[in-house]
Length: 296
Image (tube, rainbow, N blue to C red; front, side):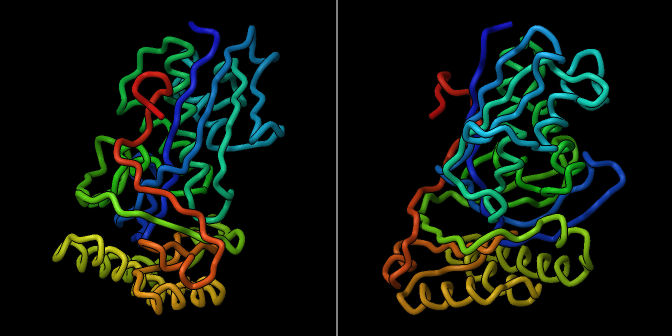
């Protein structure tokens, strides 16, 4: 056991997705594609003497609740591998830090869960494999209702294509060999739980069509074109984002909406050229990692 350990997980913009809920959260997930971002989430896990002295979660220094993080601490507890923190959990404080807006389509919950799993494994010397840690984070996020595919994409990095849904052992991946410049602008939160709890048939149909399109021509340009078509066909495009996307397109950039959030993202400088105060970043090539061991 160490005094503390820190891990980084990239933010993830889902360009399009086809949701596949399942009674087994390890099997549940989504098919689709997205972008892992250089902007992400850094988590430090600090073991405490007992669960009564720990279990606190801080988001940028403010005490908070993050169900996916709590779920990870519970499932990784050697005394309750299939349990949750309410029945035990690793005795630790978790410090989550990010510059990304929460609830705006950047997979902050998934990134926090994944980075917590990596850091906790190191801090407590749990000797879990990568697949076990990704599975724990994926299951925790699915059970929290905050995502279906961010965790596995954030572990892979780059421009991941989710060919089959689910945690390691169930899911299957491909990706695009490119590292474009990305920028984004956010107009507020959008409830992932509300969308995933509604009628998923139109979203699934649009997501499968987008995935078929991308697999026929796996390029960055086609990724954004498929994402743009998906946002409209799935009925998820909100007015403020639509206006920003159209403005970026008028400047010659591909753009679309981050799923699920009131966020527009574009390649190149389309949003800033259109007059938006956009945040620039790059695609993060390697995925989640411990900090200090070749990480950020």
